[in-house]
Each structure stands twice: as structure tokens, then as C-alpha cells.
Image (cartoon, rainbow, N blue to C red; front, side, top):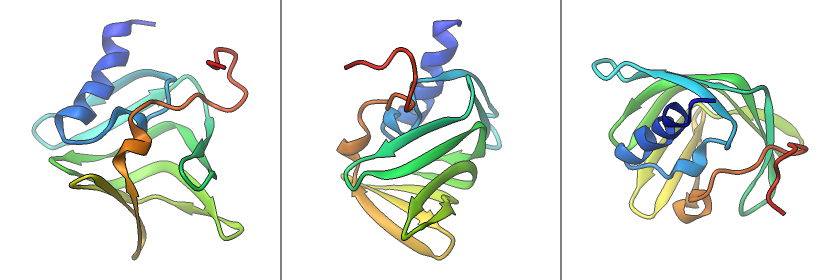
Length: 130
């Protein structure tokens, strides 16, 4: 994998005020249209993680798409989280001071952004840092 490509997806997030840990550490490549904000991130494959701090299971599709602006990711597709016994699609993420606001349709949940400082390992990935 071309590491400069891998890093720039995380750098792009940081540049817009988001912690890089919003993406798992399995990014293969990505494209970002600076004028429209449209992006697509390609992972090595589907990736399941456990989200801090409440240990919700989350699942990343192989391709994640959305629109990235300063402090706001909208039109998000490819990230689902399991809560209250069902899977929900995260449709947007906003950066609000020290917190991140996750949007699931009309419902929102806030978490400290420090929870997402480090990119999570995919569950069952071979290079998990124990």
C-alpha cells in the first residue's frame, strides 16, 4: 500500500477538524474533490470495530462515501452502528468543540472526540496491536 495515500485520508479529516480515528486503520485509498467536498474512502475490505466508549459494534463497508466540509460530514454512507438491538446507518458527523455529534437520521448522539484519536483495528484483523 502507498502510505502517503493512506495518511492523506486521515490528514484530510484532521484538516477539517475531525480526529483521524473516525476511520479504521485499513484505508487502502481514497478520493476527495476539494471543490465539492465529495469523498470516497476505500478500505481493504469490510471492517467491524467496537466503538468507544459504550462498546457498540460498528461496521464499515468497503467503500465509504460522503461530503466533507469544515466540521461537518454529511450524506454519509457505509458506516453502521448497532444500538438497541438493531443496525443504524450514520448519516452525518459534526465536530462541536471537544465533542463529535453523530447523526442517525433525526437522532443525534454526542461523544468526546478524544475517543476517536486513534484509528481502531478491525475486529479479527491480523495486525491487531495487542
